[in-house]
Length: 190
Image (cartoon, rainbow, N blue to C red):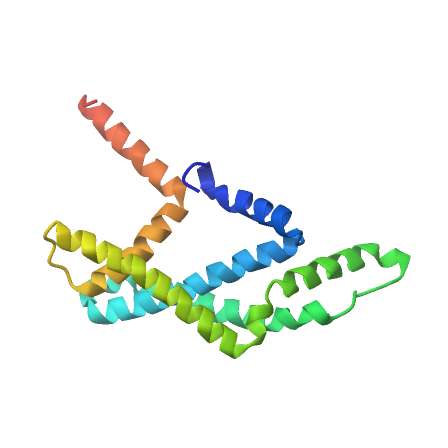
């Protein structure tokens, strides 16, 4: 993702995984969607905890609401879709080939969501995701401490979410670079 523009590394990762495992692309896409959904668990928790512990960032409540909504809708959708992997095709007649192909893709995608069938698996995966992102927040905290920043620890939870969202939208970064470049050129600065 750092080497390729517009987070194209995600697509490369899916192709490499598909080729190495022999899984269908729809299954690989489903596992990537599952991973992002589990990241949403961590980000939702970080936003809510961070906003409760650091009220000065109350302007982020709409973002927290979006993340929690994505989480609820995403988990509900994945839990609804995951059993579809065991269902047969929608139609078997030759005139229904498109329906059969769509059903096969849905079934393949659904098989990549198998973790959502088990509440225990979801709890374990969510805990692992939270732990991984908490490690990143701890690294931000350690970096802040090393340069003498005395911030509320909740700020680092919010920083993890903000930094991840910021690098996920490369257009925002380029737009900011263009804006700064225009300001500098209008003032005669290099």
